[in-house]
Length: 125
Image (tube, rainbow, N blue to C red):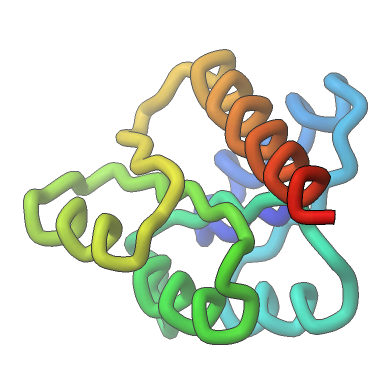
């Protein structure tokens, strides 16, 4: 799991939660570092905040789609709007989560999205 969020509390909470669930997780505060991580190792899913300085989660999603078209992406936002939801749909994100969120709901989404990706990859072989 790669988490991209400029809020330290969110990064720490998600890191602690997913480590406790025995998931491999990397957290970073910006999209540029996220792209560097993606270039250096594989991830099953990206969880990204929409509103971040330097590169928004939507801009990051566009870059990820260009480099890794099949990589699952879940966008998170504390500022939901029809405009961002529609743009997320255009990028074919796997889910759009509104903050504050229930971490158990996010965990369910991550498990389902990753399981679906693994199943599709296995069927493609």
